[in-house]
Length: 186
Ligand code: SF4
Image (cartoon, rainbow, N blue to C red; front, side):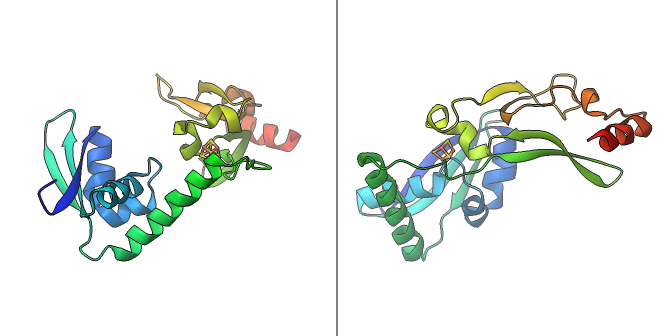
């Protein structure tokens, strides 16, 4: 708090520092899987002050940046408080989703401009970080990212994992024939 506004201090990875926070408040609002914007407005509401924004520290370099929330924030404040209220209400009730509200996403790769599905499905990014993941997706499993060509492939959450190796799916970097043959068989 600076006496007038509430500021949230965050430590961030170099990626998050440059690709998320550096792009400003509106950009964070667009893609905010951790709910930072709602969190900031709730802190500010609890203190009866405006939300100033974030003071962000790059964990690697030690650099610091200020990411300011807009001066006119009444609309956002009302929106986030209302949304938070709905979440609390749902959590306190016996309400049950017939199915989780966020769908898994198809896993695809693009070769020569053609986008192709592997047949696998990944959990939505929000679900991978969510504390209710086990509840919503009890059968989800972690596995190396099938479409990654990195030496050390990232581990991701799969909802459906039919194809475990890129090559099994027919994709081979040097062999388009193999890929086409594979597509023909499907
Ligand atoms: S895991 Fe979390 S984010 Fe995903 S659908 Fe369930 S409650 Fe929503």
